[in-house]
Length: 380
Image 1 (cartoon, rainbow, N blue to C red):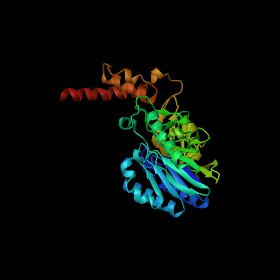
Image 2: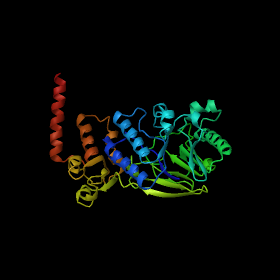
Image 3: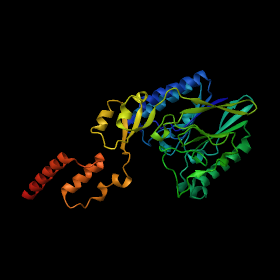
Image 4: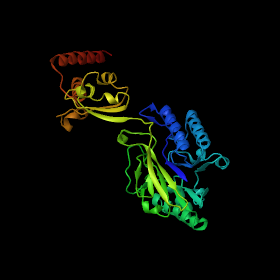
């Protein structure tokens, strides 16, 4: 049996206000082609199918189309709800969809109930664990209010069922933060009472654990891995190699894992330097990328954003950190709110924004403007 481990699709996501719908559609087409060419039997989605609990119509249509295409390509799909999903909405018609090969695990009542798929030599048992909110579940399950406690109880139920079913191999899907893994800036905080992470040893009863929530593809242990998000969703992910894990289970139940990197990608890049450095042609490769730029000029260039947009299609962040200027100098404006005159406030603001003091002509102009404003106010 060949399995494709994915997670954190975040359908409907934007990147600093820019829609990722078309790029995501292209990537999902690549996934469907991969299922066909690599003879993938099962596609796993370990939570956060959608980015919002109430996704847009076009986003739901994209997911529906992708599910149909994956099934037509020969795969069954097993998906769990994540902390971004509405479990009720995602789980709609799950019993009916299961007959078509799409298995949605979105309720805590499904924890410990396997999805059994045949393989030469026996069956592979898939146990989906949707994102479990500790606070409302703690009383029902008689656990502490922590992710570790509720997931410990979830795995107890899984282990108990494995002893009854005795599958050839066991695969667990979970959406959590495992100890030892590396987060990025784009994951939503799921900490409860300071309890954020769970030990990877919690999943030692499974032959493979397909984790979701963290957006970097990574190995926690040989049998516990994150596939990461399909696309980068923050500039902290600029060095991620987005992809998935392909898991093979043979007729003896032996598990082997290989990585797959998506050909469809979104390039995000942080650029830092003077205006001349950034626009001098050295970064031409990032003209079509999503860029975050930090200018280090001692004096802030005029119309910096407008000029940068002539060199880069997507300037999504722009910061100024002048070289040689002390931190206290950069924030002088914030300390002059109680300046005695309007002129003092405007002068400090200019220095805060441009990183230098007014010259003689600018001082004269500002003096004239603020005096006119004062006289106009006095006449009202």
